[in-house]
Length: 138
Image (cartoon, rainbow, N blue to C red; front, side):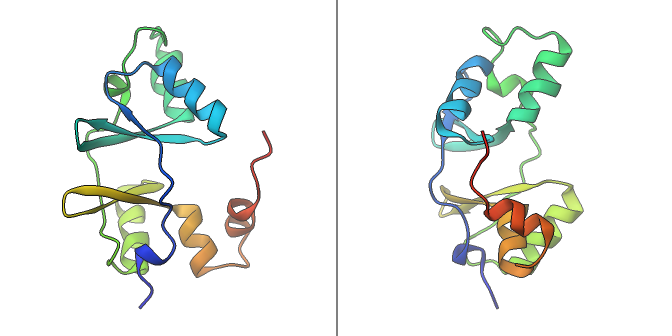
């Protein structure tokens, strides 16, 4: 059995739910990433992607300088443990139509597993795996 912990990302960027969309967009730009994990204290409350900022924020005429991440974060958070089976994690992604799962152990955030991570691990010859393994082009 291949576990989530064998290929999850551990270099995470977290931001507080009270941070603005602009701050998150700048953080994503500066770190060349596409998502941040949103927290409230020590609790993970969601994930915000660059697409979320665009579609849920800007396209809805929300001011990115005053809108808070917690205003656009989905609240139906699905998580896994680093000891969970990778196939089970993929099934969760499919069931809940999500592309990323926070990895939580003992109530603490320890990683993030994405659809791309699973593709690289499970189907290394797939197009998604090939794209996910490449360096960012921005």
